[in-house]
Length: 77
Image 1 (cartoon, rainbow, N blue to C red):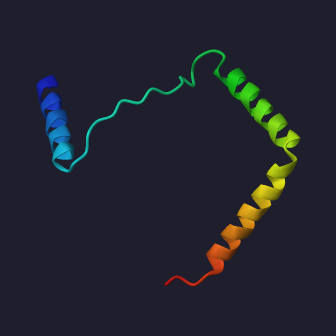
Image 2 (image 1 turned 45 degrees about the horizontal axis):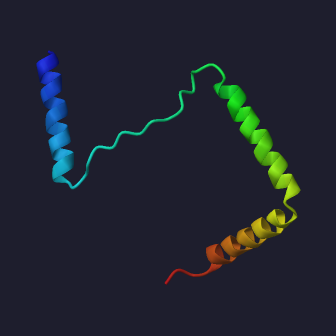
């Protein structure tokens, strides 16, 4: 059975390569590791504090949101 699974995987990879794709390995944080939730909370708190300290940020975000609203209302050509 392992040989047939290996062969199917090989065929699938060959098909994807024929479509011009290539495999990429991506390493991500392990969400199950101890301390992950605490690190997320620490970074979220730090981000919130930085946002609160930046007086120009809300004005910038409001302008960006207004631009999105205008773009959404423009007719598509």
